[in-house]
Image (spheres, rainbow, N blue to C red):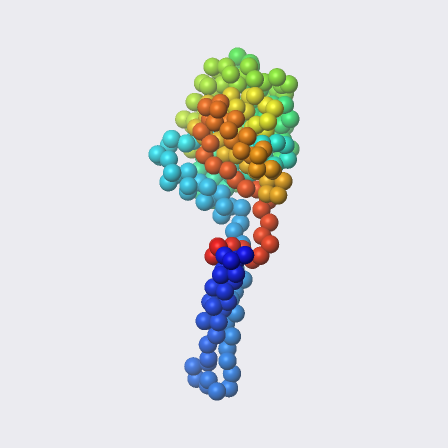
Length: 249
């Protein structure tokens, strides 16, 4: 509580400093300049910060294929992948490819209301499939989507194949960023296989739900598989005091 109390005191001090008298008739009234409404960060603001950290933390062009996953179902990794891709394409004006790499229980076709009949599963299993025909332009800016395509209850062999490596390399050369929405780490071996083949992994955990031990275990499993964990996104965080006070803690 000590740091919270200090933050509240600093905020109150700033508030008091905003009390000023009218310059022309100070004896009549005191004008109180109340702090304006402190703007909360929007999702696009947060994801632009993520993009900035990627650019400043790693050599230019070294992190282009990013897998987004979570410790378990329901932590918000798909929503995060969509928001991140939209922000990069629309606000950052980049060419972005979003891939539904969850061949067991895909979601992205529902998010964008498109058919998923032809997609990643077909590209990786059918010799005649042309990848250019699978790109679907969605949302604002240069955002493209590859749906899951053919569902597969056992996709591990598909992602272990050299064909997946080749496809990932080709897409990396065509787009500024390639975002893969993957199944949860727990219980899905293909996520760990993909994790070591992309440039980096972002782990999404849900505030107030994901247990610390579960999050640590998921991160360690990714590292043990050879994946580079870029960071963790805390999803659905609740602010119990005004956000501007958090910034002073």
